[in-house]
Image (cartoon, rainbow, N blue to C red; front, side, top):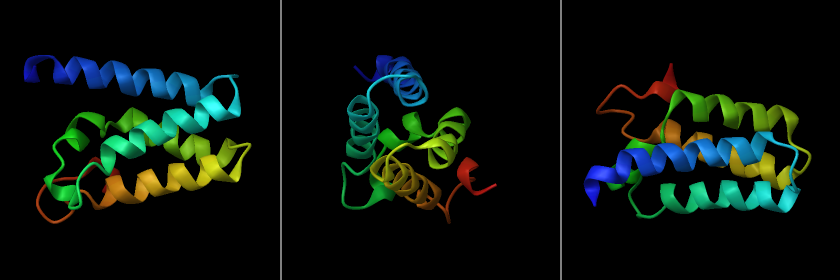
Length: 101
């Protein structure tokens, strides 16, 4: 249930980071970013998407910016920039957004 959500998403983000920064196949890296994109865009209004609270970590920010500078494929760069844009705009007027500092 909701009690396990924080640990689940923490592990999920760690796995995605490991896949994206590892030496694996490009398609696997792209799919890992696509999974995060699915969670982040699960609702029409991103400010109503509670899943973002679990996904939005400073470590993920570092991973996404690293992908932008190291990406072998333009699709990965696009997906990383898209995630950064969405996460930066999440609750930008209501709370302190760690991606805006």
